[in-house]
Every structure is written in C-alpha cells, then in structure tokens.
Image 1 (cartoon, rainbow over the protein chains, first blue to last red):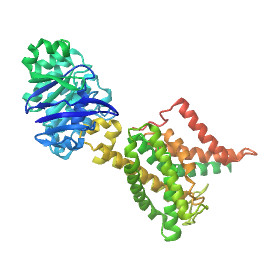
Image 2: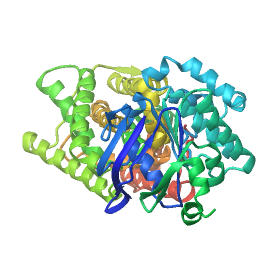
Image 3: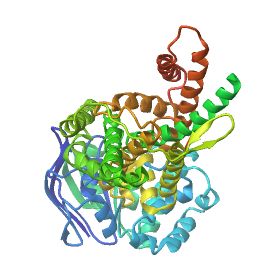
Image 4: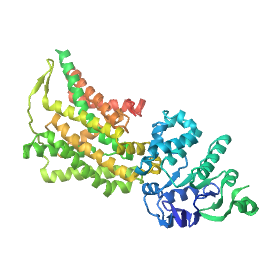
Length: 235
Length: 295
C-alpha cells in the first residue's frame, strides 16, 4: 500500500531523516515506534509532502508520489491525523467534520462518512454545534481522527494519537484504531510513544532512532527480542 | 449652527468611513491569511487612483466602471508579486516580507512617476448633490459609499457561503489542518494575496471618488498609515473588523475636525491626524487585539 525508500528530509540545514525505508501492507496496522526526536513525525510530514523530501522515494499503491502536492495525496486516499490536533478552533464540530469532506471525492460520500464517525464517536453527534476550540482534549482528538475519516481515506497515518490523553481515553483511541482496521478496512500507519498499547494492536513494527530504522519485524518477534525493546523502547 | 454642522460631519464621516473600511480590507485579508504586513499598501491604492484618472480624464468614462478594472489589475499585480517574491519569503523572518512589500510600493510609485510625472492631478465628476437639510451630500460620494458596502458584502458572502471561501477560512484557522483536509494551501495563499491586492487597488477608485484631488505617485503614504490605524481598530486579521474599524475611524476623523475647528488658533486638519495616532497608541496599549470583536 505504502512503500518508503531511503527517504531524506529535514528543516533548514538540519537533516532529520537518514534514509529510513519501510513498507505498510494493505489492511494492516503498522506501528512506527521510537523515542522522542527520532524523526517519526518528520517522516509522516515528509510522506504527505508538507515537509519537502530531499531524496528517496515514496510509493503509494505502486505509484511514485514522492513530490506529489499534499492536497493531491489526500485526493488519492492518503490521510494524516497530525500531532497536536490542528483543528479549526472557531468552527463548530460539524464544520470541522465538513471540512474533512472538502474534496469532491469525499463530498460525494459526506452523509455516509458523517454517519460512520457519529457511530464511532456518539459524543461528537451530541456536540456537533459546539466550537471545536472549547472541547476537552479527548473530544478534540476524536474530531481530528473523524475529520481525517471524512476525507474517505484508504491509508490513514496517525501521529501520536494518544499523546496527552488520560489512560481511559488512550484505550478508547486504540480501540478506534482497531475498528478502523477490522470494521472499515483501512490501512494504518501508527506513530506512537505508547509502546505497550501499540504492540497490542500492531501487526508489524518498525523501530526508529536518530532518523533511521534500527529494527523491524512482526509484532511477536519484536516483543520477544529483549535486546530491541530494552535498547530503543525502554521496556 | 454648530449642531447642524456636527450632524453633517457625522453622516459624511460614516460615508467616508465605509470607504476607509473597504480600503483596509485587503490589508487585513493578507495579514489574516499569510501573516504578511503589506507596508506598500498605499502604493496599491495610488495605482487605483491613476486607473480612475485614466478612465475619467483620458477615456471620458464613468469612474464606477474603473472599479472592476482596478480589481482585475490588482489581481494580476497581486499574483505576479506573490509568485515572484512573497511565496519564497513566507518561511523567512518577517523582515523579509516587510522589505519586499515596501520595495514593491516604491517600485510602483517610481513606475507611475516615470509614466505620468509627479505633479498633483485631480478630476471633477459632478453628478449633483442630495440635500439632507443639514448637509449637502454629493452623489459621487454616495456612490463611493454604496460601492464599498457592496464589495464588503460580496467578500463576506464569498468567505462564508462558497467552497473556496470556506477553504480560505480553514487556512486562517489552521493551515496544517487545512492541508490534511485536502485544501491546496499554497493556492489559497496565492488567491488571498491576489484578492487582497485587488481589493486595495479597487479601493483606490472609491477613495478618489471621495477625494478627487491630490492624486500623485506619492499619495499612498498617508493612506498606509490610516489603514494601519483602522486595521488595528478592527483587530488586524479580520477584513470585516477592518470594515467596522473604518466606520469608526471616518466618524472620528470627520467629527473631530469640526470640534477642533472651534478652538481658536488651531489648524484642525493637523490635529485630526494627531488624534488618529493617539487613538492607535491608546488601543495598542490597552487592547492590542482590537476593539471590535469579529469572527
């Protein structure tokens, strides 16, 4: 579904990504784990091209999309749930969700997408006319995830969706991620710092450190390898 | 007598204020979307004034016809300026865009001077007065006011009722959020910059309908300063805030002129300017987010 080859990028003169390569197969949950500052968020931003790639390749469904503009990638079915939410605070919950259906393709499925997210998060239906900026942190995260679902994606990339949430909400977020895979049939690339919860949900795991991939494997193998977990994940 | 004069000034002030407001909307739109301060604002107004002169004096056409043409010229200049300079400077320190817009202003002033010379010009579009009893209102000024209100309304509808406008609002709220929704953020930047410049050049036509004298390549400076006061009154980043800021400013400027004229030995015009900047200072001190709350 998504294939990244030796991607390079950074900010100004500082290189952050040092040729990580990874692959996300259709219908899977692939987790990208690693400590703070490993370059995980930069990787997702570079894949969407909101940070310009310096080198390497990004393939989506076999097509080279390395330098395709972000809005065209969203049109092709790639969605990003950005770190730090990035909601429209002075718009209502409904208007935020409607913005997710901004592109023609998504607009055609607006009402069914809306049904879907209101089924996933009934609380958003209750709050649909509230300003998004006034919601609690957990509710805002629900809006951010739902807004991405409104774009009618096939691949959804989540950047630390459990960050800053209370433990009960964290498990709710991971429950939602599993539903995206099993009920909606999405392909998921999950960037997380919450190692335990991620290892419980993921099919395949990559470990990133200092801008490159240090280890990878099916989840069970990673869990068993004490070397890897203690060196990079602090478990 | 004084009372009648004051009433007249209030009405004239509000009408002028609508035009001032419209002349600031472009500045606020560009700041709101791109966080770029257009220091060359007044020079773009000046271009609009020269387009009006050309329409009236050279072609013998109605100045109202110059409005859409000025808007179109502004769109073209805006797009050119955005793609040649602003686009590359968006991630640079703020000083870069300040210098770029300042230079663009100087470039426009000197180009117009090369073509038309630097003497003061004017035109006389006399289409009668409406007598309100306490004051006589030139119909041309009334047109300028109505045109401004209409353009402000159109912008409001465009922003709130069309898809492109909604996309623009989302970019103002959170550009990264807009990007992940599939909005072409770069395109939205280019479009709002072009529309902002288009509005500003068009406002040059409306302003000269109000003040059809003193048109020269360097007339913009005073308007730049006024636009900053008005934009700050309206909260800087909101075009509608700017419009209402303009109403307040026009009202204050015209009314204080009458009151200052009562003081013996005082040159009222200079004092109204002084007052404008006192207001700017006071607002910046006590309420830097603007006095008018617009969404």
